[in-house]
Image (tube, rainbow, N blue to C red; front, side, top):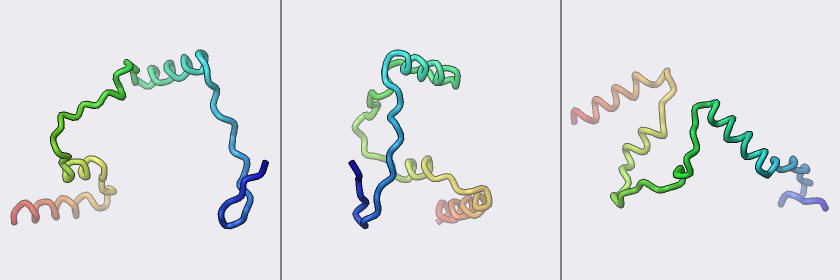
Length: 83
């Protein structure tokens, strides 16, 4: 079977899916543990307490300026806090 992009070009064959099963799961857990990541089973449990999202805090966590812009961003923050 061939799949075609909406613009008409054929789509490449996708790679085989990763292995599934107990052996693959053990390898993944071992790999994560070697990296210092411990899976407890509670990772997908929400910790939200119902308060509205603090968008400025979220954006500060998600967007880190490149090193050459650090000083510019720091000056901008000082200016906005002083006003």
